[in-house]
Amino acid sequence: MSNLQITGYKCKHCGRIHYPRHEQCLQCHGREFESIAPEGNATLLAYTQIFNLPWGFDERFLIIGVAQFGNGIKSMGQIKAESLDQLHTGMQLRPVWEPVRYVYGEPVYGLKLEPMG
Amino acid sequence: MRDVAIIGVGMIPFGRRDQDSLIDMLAYASMKALDDAHLGDKAVDAVYVANMGGGILQHQTGIASALVDRLSLLPAAADLVENGPASGASAIKNGVQAIASGYSDVVLVAGGEKMREVTGWRATDFVATLTHPESEYPYGITLPGMAGMFTRLYMEQHGLTAEALVAVAIKNQEMGALNPYAHVEMMITKEGIFDSPHSVVNNPLVADPLRLYDACPVSDGAAAVLMCPLEMARELTEKQPVVVAGFGQATDTHTLQERDDPTDLKAVRLAAQQAFDRAKLKPSDVDVAELHDAFTVLEIAESEHVGFFGKGEGSKAALAGLTRFGGKIPINVSGGLKARGHPVGATGVAQVVEITWQLRHELPKERQVKNAKVGLTVNFGGFGNNVLAFVLRRAS
Ligand SMILES: [Zn+2]
Image 1: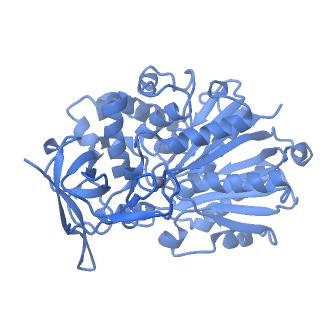
Image 2: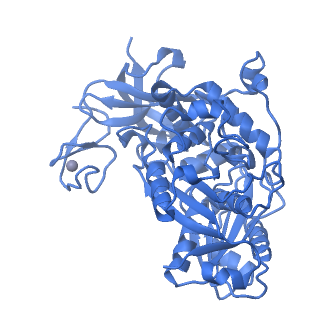
Image 3: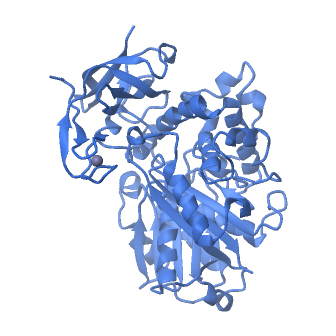
């Protein structure tokens, strides 16, 4: 059982994986989906380090990326790294579910990704 | 369907306009467009207003009703069009469809945004509200952040170089310095922002690998166009009509992560193709283009996706000067979003205003493309999830 609060949607007709949710499959317009949870570690597909943060963040910078889980779910997440020197596309990341921001002092949980050594 | 002509255009200088409200700016640009057409008391049937953030930034809604009243154009129909940073082109498209279909004859489109009355922190958050509320926004992703991820992929896969981005930044700021409507009227040098010890201080990272001078400024501003059926243009005004020869619009996935190839700006490709098909013209017919360079990378990527250059060739073209004023296909002779600024609701309208001036041959010679007959605009909404293109043609 994954503790990641991410639900992917696998089209029962063509197998395409969706996240977030759609009412119809992006590929075949099928309407039936199997709910799936992210499995295993994730592969880094894209990333950046952002220095001009939006309202609501006190950090000096954020490293954000998109990663793909073993079963095909792709998700954005915050990357737990100090510098981009630790990262390259295609590397493996370990997913954890932790606060990603605070709204009026309350944590908002989301996907964080740790580079695997 | 009827052919649609642009008969009046107007713009106010973009920048920081503390003294003007959002409605003030929309009204000033609208009056300029009405006066430009010398329309006198001829009735305006419909007004389309492009604005993305009035509800969030000014805590004001019903913007179109407010503007039509301010202009005393009552009882003209009035609608607000909100389509993120592509609101401007969307509003024009609505006006074109209203005229082409025969429902309206004289349509005013005004686009405006007032972004400088909030802090940069708030403005960044405001634009980020167009990201996916569940799978993107909570992480703190910003539009520069999206562009940063896109840029790295483009560098890894399509031969984009930091040097090509710098060439776009310098070109657009050079042209912006000649444009009295531009927010940024400052020339920059390659040494200052790229290859000297000072450059990392002058030009810090914003969203790696994008730097400060890769991004457009946050601006206030407004622009407006007045349109009517081509067949009526000659009797309504003595101005040289510019024909909306074709428009295109396409959408793509809300999130970047769901695109099979995130470096394929599918909506740009499809919108441009549709616009060219409707105009019965091709990319090589274009004399001058205004592309949506909210980030330098987008000018290069769009120049490939609209068909000016093959994929991977846009960088080389920028470095070779092909997209400069006087080059093979001059792009963003106005300075683009990079120098003119990007008051989001105004941008798509400002692009059409600029191309109209080009096609009427009304600009000062240092930035008038000689004998320009066909122009292209691309207005890029979301991170490429809603894109519009116009092909404009000087009426014979
Ligand atoms: Zn399917």
